[in-house]
Length: 563
Image (cartoon, rainbow, N blue to C red; front, side):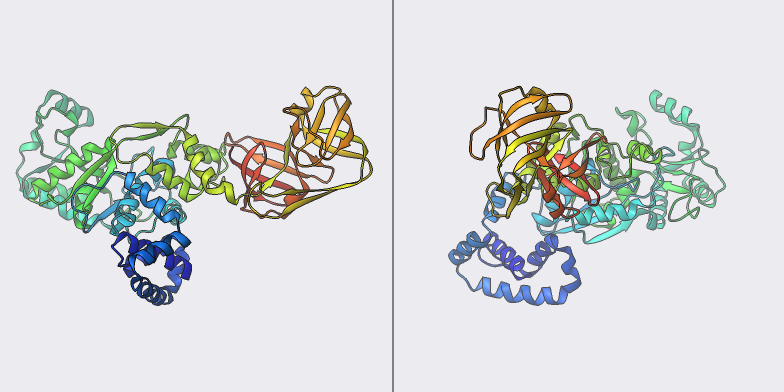
């Protein structure tokens, strides 16, 4: 705990002219170790004590100590300076992330979650609010009751700590109150036109007969809607805009409608539900948003928010609206609804299935929260749509895990290699080529020794080839058939021919099954030292890729991360 407090105290002091502050340091510590929330009293005392010591140092002493214990902090500062600054006033930043709970978070959600958290909490030490947008959606896109907790779990794993959480289904009375305010201003009316007629009138820039009804009649009809006198599709509340507006979608938009779907939390208590732009006009004002960051596909919602606030004479001059381009990932479908359909039909094996591209599927593959954050932040605040190679995420993850990951041998599609005239010998191979993570020992008996090598390597070998079993011995191929390659031992240190350094395992191998990103599995043999790995550990199968161990037993199961 003390090391975490010290490094963030020094970093905070470095960023604020030598004076660290308690609250932002605690926030940073909890960002790395959320479990310390259970020790808030102790954390508060230790933080105050460490900050007192840090603030007594000169700025030169602080910087020297920071370089000594946390040099990457200066690198992070340089990276942050490359990221676009938040526009407008930033002395008190309040931002929110508002996913629809149809399932857990996926990479597309992560962009908005990470950007809102980064600008509100990390860059400006402000407030970050999670709002679960659980108003009734379409019949095709339904709320998943499990998603409420799954989203919170995903946020916790990503270290995106929020100050408040709100559910829109708990705020229905507020939406009704605001609807009545708009009616009182004579800026809304109950429309019972058919959907077809409504669309036609919008296209023709014509007002329907209901638009001229007095506000008393609108209020009466609205109450009838709330009481259930109208059925789904029979009546909607529309806001008066300009029926000749250049954008047909802006003309007298629906702000409340009837849905007879049963809500997973509130049941049948409410059947009049707000549309997205209306609910946000209410919540963004009442929750005190200073910056509203959303995808540019939601520009209409921004336009309507402003229009509703103008209608109610609300001053929003302090609010900044920021629209980011959509992030597409090359060759990947980020549709939660499609993933859920395939989970329900048993085509996918739950949200951890790599084909869902959910955050929890990335977690099961060994992708780190830090890599996801860097990947997202690299797209920035640009309004341009971007198509990003998934390799960018893998590259960030590789930087995070490469120096901390042990190496093991894995042979897919194994073929037997028999070595004659083997000398009794012991070989030691490091678990990591650069860092001291221990060594693997192999004991070979005298006489005949059986190994297994990848079949694609075996297929290209021919008589007389000198082959190096990586890190161990060199053999010469004497013959081969469909079942095996025969060879003779020629030494431990003798060089092999180019491209003839092969992965291998002994007869003491373990059965291994790797789940690929395609959802398929690939079997093979893993070396005996895999007995030393732990479930949940990320390792590297040399010349194959990084994997995360998902299960240990008679068969070792792993999930492929990336190469």
